[in-house]
View: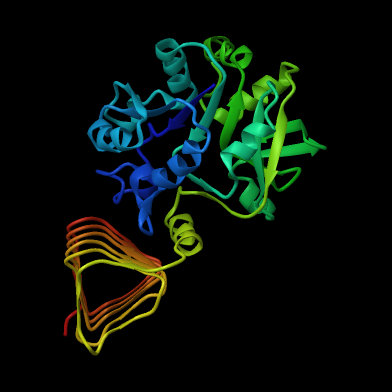
Length: 331
């Protein structure tokens, strides 16, 4: 068996913060999304590949080298050119060879051990499923109906979900299923993993489910990104910074080197502050601030602010600010 981490998307729903950085490499506390995944993959001891695109290849190369993974690069530079998940899987099989594959979406954060997941794999397709507990939320995903651990129905993004159990981005597929990818794509089917699983089920292929319950985040929106930060950031990581004696830090937070916390500022809880930021007379909580951003006389809550921004005299709530933006209200 081989592991493939799918990270070939352009994350347009999180633009502009993902315009120049792949979603899988966004920080969640002290580590990136992909670091969390690779920590779990390492337990399996399996040969690992990361599938990405030409545009983000240079971003992933040092990461792959650090973790001992290999890159599979699709020759695309824009969203409209991408192969899609199943198209990328076909490229991987063509390049790496036919085998059983553990397939993981590179923007998923999940609580279970991959070693435990593989112990439940017995040569039949196995999908990880999670109860989102809300039919409205389930509409966004592939909805699963089970009998025991056997999948009896699977519908991608249904208007009327039959359950709140959804398929997450972790699959174990045997070579007998991987060889069917060509047939699936030639039939003109939709190039997304949920539709492929539903197609397999209609062909009479037995699919099993691995249920887990602690947490799962599909980092597809600012809300899910911030919620993941709140779940996974357990303790503070503060590097070499300058902090005023009148400022206060409420853990847990991550504050990277070179940052200055000036005046009467309050940082945290659940704040990520990148390198060389300036926070002056401001409150920042439940938020992610990328490097070299200056925030003065402002309150930032449940917001994501990209690098090299200037925010002055504002109250920002549930906001997403692109890089190099300058926003201020008059004194």
